[in-house]
Amino acid sequence: MSRAVLITGASSGIGAALAREFATRGADVALAARRTDRLEELSKELTARGRRALVLACDVTRDGDLEAAAARTREALGGIDVVVANAGFGVVGPAETLTLADYRRQFETNVFGVLRTLYATLDDLKRSRGVFAIIGSVSGHLATPNGTPYAMSKFAVRALAEGLRHELRPAGVAVTLLSPGFVESEIRLVDNDGRLRAGGRDIVPSWLRMRTATAARQIATAIERRQRERIVTGHGKALVFLARHAPGLMSALVGLSGYRGRSHPGQA
Image 1 (cartoon, rainbow, N blue to C red):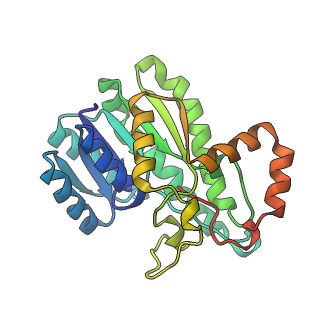
Image 2 (cartoon, rainbow, N blue to C red):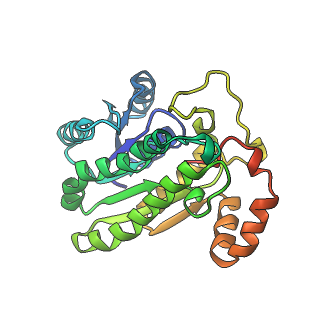
Image 3 (spheres, rainbow, N blue to C red):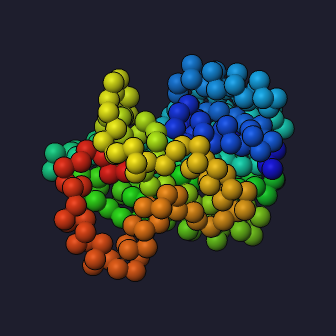
């Protein structure tokens, strides 16, 4: 198992579950996010298991934060073997009701946050011949009504992963794209400004949501194997298959579905 893993957006959802999974597999973890109170709790849990867990106050939209996080990880853990660019949220709503500022806010976190993470850690990954993992989404393969900002951002990081994979292969760095469908997390409880709505209700039925720990196991395995891409969740695999091989049918299904009445397109 990798020696040191840096995860952005590690305070909840997939990020926190990945930290637990990597620690279970014997890795030390650097936990980067804005909500340091949650990171502290997670760090205590992982430390009790005998792993090193570094808490890093980090906002992926702020220049310099990721460089500082990478430097502290390097110093505390001796290097970086895996980086998981996981931080993200979803801006939703009909395009005619949104503004350019909404789209910019979405891209600042979901796209430029990934790029900031890459630039801050690339030299480390070249030294370790490690893995740069990007948490995309099924929405990066299929755009639905009321979710164009989120889908655009996830299409963008899918393109980034595909191009980077060829650029970085000669340096020994693998690029893995993870595309989850509906997973248990707080993403659908976060508003268009990136703020968690206290007491919010997840609009996706529980039977359709994969357990976060299950998703984390699949993602960690894909990263360990240096896979090109992994679609996570059964419904996600079915949707991506249809989008790739039967786009007309997929478009008709989206038109007939209840997506138009939903307030969130999917999962990060």
